[in-house]
Image 1 (tube, one colour):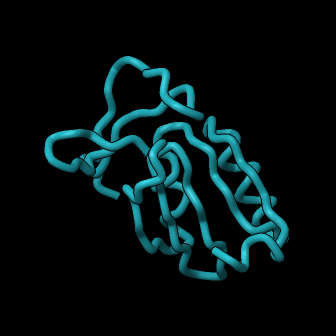
Image 2 (image 1 turned 180 degrees about the horizontal axis):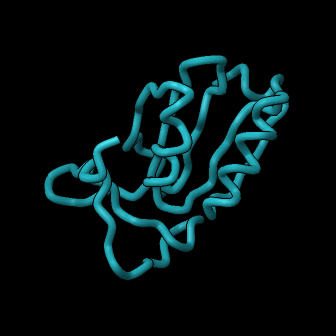
Length: 114
């Protein structure tokens, strides 16, 4: 993971639902976007990440391999992470909470519409 992929400001900002949102390197028309919510599709080898800002606009969409997932999430600002509840989601949820993220697990019946 290239450390220049995400920019970090020295001061934490009060922002929407996430206390310590940091800007990512993705910008639109000069405005830096903040990832406040991250959805992760848990799989065996390849994980799909989808991050949105406080307005609900997509600011991050990536596919990462299992070996890269923890490094990618480590470089993200503290945010809410949503995943489908399954055996491996509990493992990843504990790992992400140790990094300062807030993890929400959802029943598979509520994940299907997404």
